[in-house]
Image 1 (tube, one colour):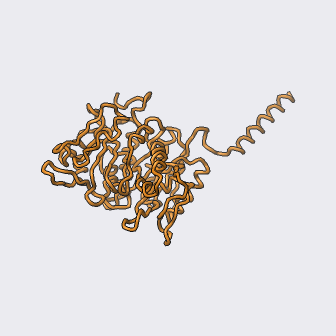
Image 2 (cartoon, helix red, strand yellow):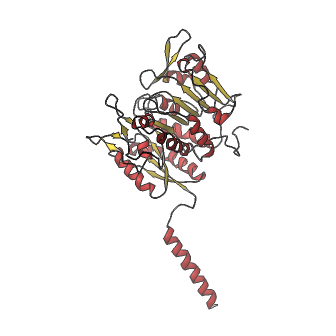
Image 3 (spheres, one colour):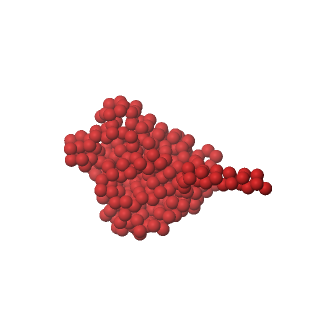
Amino acid sequence: MRVLRLQLTVLILCVLITLRAFGTAPKEGKQRIAVVVEPNIYNHIKGELRIYSEDLRNIGYSVITINTKWKTSFALRSALQREYEEGLVGCVLVGSIPIPLFHRDKKSEPRPCVLALMDLDGVWKKDATNSHYIGLPSQPEIFPEIWVGVIAPNSSRGSEVRQLKRYFNKLHAFRTARDLVPQTQKKTLSFVEFNWKRFTTMGLDVLYGEDVVVVRSPGDSSPIRLFRELRKGYEFITIEAPNNGGFTGLKICEENGKRDDLGITEIKQARPATAFYSVFSCSVCCPTKEDYIGGSLIFETPGGVLVHGTTMPGGMNCPDILYKAWVTSSSFGEAFKKWFSHEIPRDAKATDRHWYLGAIVLGDPTLDFPHRPGKLIKGK
């Protein structure tokens, strides 16, 4: 009996020591995500954030929610550095959260650069006023430690709270297999403005094989054609076109050679059910600008849950590398991180590396590719 009691005592002590050593750390294998929320809207979307966090936990993540008011993006970066030491793999910025700005040259204005939040061990050079970055880390290679996604409503398009509620509700519906995308014969579209006709599938064949519609011939790649295609319910659409000189629209060539705009109004009228977008157009995914196209695709369409684009000129080469990584990774965010690691070091000159600094993911980066081998395809 004494032996049994002694064994039981030893067992209890072992358990207590183990609990003390590991505390309340997440279970082994859990990946830690920070959801950083604008304090002014936090209380208004607590219900949606709770459901979002539950959805993330159900797919294996450990979630922390932070609603601190940040004076600068530098303070946010310092906080993420501390969280990275605790196992952080990614961060989702919700609402108006300060994003590091990067000044590419004297002629251009500073633009958001999420890479500065992803590359947590790099020493980025600040300007004299300490308000934005003007230089990349000195090491020849820049490798992101975490991924970052931005969910920032269009400030001029009505209540930001209402936009966020609507987005998180459709995101939850998408996750729980109530497919937002009608079943069409073709699952994906590559729309190429005629003057950019050197482009074709833009890497979508990596994801969908031969099941890619390419529109790029004169007359076909017109604003009216794109409007019609948006209404067909593709799962994934890439758009290759110049912007309209700003952030609010795309300039698309008509059959007569003249260019016309396709902007927020037309996107809303088309009501696309498409879930994923890659927009190869300079600067139209800049969340600090009113009426930016990337925000419209997420917040003003029935289907948009994720947009890949750029806040600056250029920065979206080799999408096939990104899509290959998405098929084999746990999330789009993880694939985005791998794409950065592949593309940035390849261009050794600082001027070349600047070309990628605007790349950004709008929406939820934790989404994985729906048709990954071995995974049930929605609707089938």
